[in-house]
Length: 264
Image (cartoon, rainbow, N blue to C red):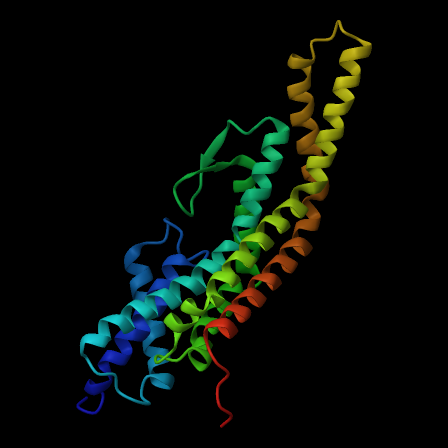
């Protein structure tokens, strides 16, 4: 124990990064997961990681130690937020579809954030979480946060990379990619519902006796749900590509923040 005590600050830094990652990453940041469970899981992963990366050089508890804590929290938040960002794709796509279907005013509570979210977006989000767990994506997240110490050690240069603008550029590019993916994901239903609007507009001109405002809303909702049922089997391939982009984005972030480890 006397040999381990000088390395206790190292474990605290590891614990800060992993805790911040769990608070921002998908699945684990869900409000339904108890806070005690999150802290216990973070402590367990921190102990496992500490055995491999925390015993190299003891960290000094001085004025710079507080800065190191802030830096590790930011690293964990950046990694977790990047992973969560690609899960918002399905909610944005669902919002686009809800607006076209006429369900934009009917929102439900999002179990991830506790805020209101669109019905179709929440439905897709639940499917994405289930598929992510079935693909063992949470195991890859654990593996990624542990291996991040090879590229982003405890003595990383995060603040210097932020000052250089590399992190801002990566986040802006990720935001644009997310909106592009959301448009691509919602495009089939949005285009089909737009054509339904065009058909209803033509019908209102050829048969003015029909009350399009009364008939059009249920027609669009029925057409939207039928199209959603048709494209539902393809979600598994769609989400596989989305999860692949997620892990590639995490790899790019690690390359932006960290440096390649020296060959042993």
